[in-house]
Image (tube, rainbow over all chains, first blue to last red; front, side, top):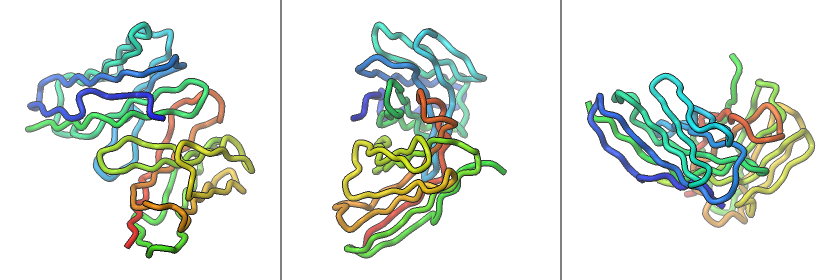
Length: 109
Length: 114
């Protein structure tokens, strides 16, 4: 049962631009996490935002959470070619993490 | 170095054969997880273990089996009953099996059935 649903499925931008990815989910959560996956590799944790938080920053990453709309967004500012990867949101309630299908981000130099 | 290792990186199997994927962690984490990823898809949970000698089925456990005899190890067996086993398999761990927290992932094993 996949709860998180990322949008868009694919995104292509120029280096230096900002990239925004969205995640919608269906049921109440304890926290929402964002992960990054380079092609053919494991996932790497980027940021965790708890259900009582609205916004969180980490370097060039900014995550927002709107529990009333059951949605989250991940903003990557001043993108670099090295940011090219798939990005997944994962929600946690009382069960193990449930991952969405991801957004494939391509940053063109 | 602390981390999660998976072996082998690539695995080929003939139809009808069982095959076991290895996952080892030296992070002293209590909980471990197995996911399956198909091309262009997210991760689907196969099995998870919150503590040694205990494990639970995930969303797609049919055709798979696991064991958790040691804290560091959580091997996954893909049996001949799994109809479409070709996929990328990812192992992960978390410090505790309580409220899901940050997951640490291994590099994955790509299984191909010939």
